[in-house]
Image 1 (cartoon, one colour):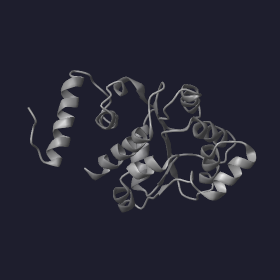
Image 2: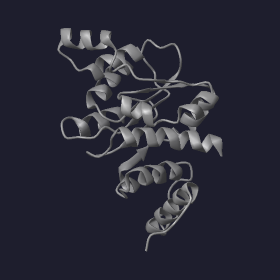
Image 3: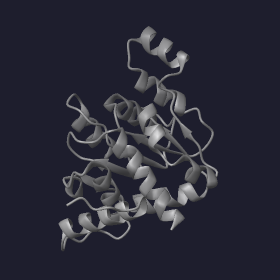
Length: 207
């Protein structure tokens, strides 16, 4: 039977279904809203196991957002999915350089991906940044090199690219980078997941 509900009731009902399905599973309190938000976005309960968090990652991300840090994404889709009014009220902005003409030109000249070059461009921002990567493992690989050489120090890396080539490896690389991370281990992920993690952090501030 179709349930007739108001929009807010639909979300509340969805999260109740998620809680019921997870049953007695226990998560770290600070991580639980992120896990449930990603499951809500994807209808995929594998994220209850796939999402891994460095110590204090959620708390560090929330505190940085409260201080007006910016978010850098690797896709326009992730940028579109992030709640920009909520971020703006905190003084932050979302950046995505993937479609910039100078990025495309340099990537072609060097024979590398636009995602990698866009991370190099993001490293020049003068604001603390959370990097939310949902599509390109080459963005994570470039970020790791930028961190290694001291050119950037992300507040937090959300590493959730989806796919098959270098996806697993790039996520594992980020977990050795020495910066806070939220990573979806394995092949699953996506721009919608990256945005969902960002929104889960923002919504904890708005509560």
